Image (cartoon, rainbow, N blue to C red; front, side):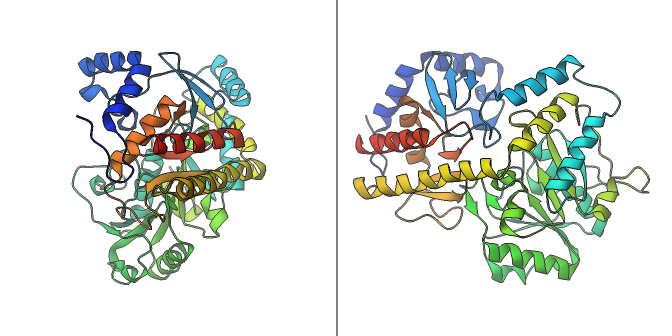
Length: 428
């Protein structure tokens, strides 16, 4: 029996059947995957209901699945692929680096070049260490803050996501080593300025903030909140950490450059490699010095694949291309998308809206954008069915309708996506 969603009236049976009719090979692969992986999943974001789209190849703004269907990619590797898939400069850099050996024991000049580029580019970064992922960068930033301040509590925002290891599971045993005991953490609501006064400042090592809460639904933190946290951390001797793993795309120097708030430490990832695995943590030289081999005791940081020449080569190719002109282009696409969805809402009478900043966007149920995570807690089924309906119309977005535009996309791609959204909603 068909069930319709409460807000948009989407027919679950009709939409799922249309999707499965288009993607039988993806469903078969999911059946195979379930025999060898828990739930058929090795990466939580990848598996959707009733089946994920199994991708065979990608190029520019498009991906092709194992059934031969082509889609415009609206999520772009969860915001990592800002240049589009298979960008020739990145592909050439990766091929060149790979031909000279994928991994060395020693350092390379190109690592120094990348560090110099990041120091020159990001306002908060005086010195930097490379990592394999954004998750590692966040973990190292927290380790550094605890070691530098001698305190243990970390403050974050409700709905913030800081990588594959949840913040409450992070602790230190000696300088920087991880263990399983839950470390002191406090989470405060987005933009709740009144809660800042009540924090246990005498033990706060750091406040960890995503300038846009991505996984929670693309909620920008207000400039007032960021400035208040910057002022109070300076006053209390705590550090301010920006998790810019996602928001580094908001300007050549990240959200901190765009918003005019400079943290003590910054975690980077995603866009840095345009699809290659790489991250970085950087900031004040005196704080980052906790990693120095000359410091006793020091925070240990190692990793077999850290600063590998292939990822470093990709990043050196990516950074010059992510300039002001490119950021303006993808931001314009984000704004065009917002205006287009607003027009759809007016024409159809359906309660649909958009949150986000620049090229980072998320669809939501409602007549006005929700102000904070949890404000639209019952929208999950509507968003899931909308994502499936869009897939049957040639547009790939995440199950929660998160979008991150790439420079390979044009106004035509955005207009087609908006038209597809209207088609799904009017066919309800």
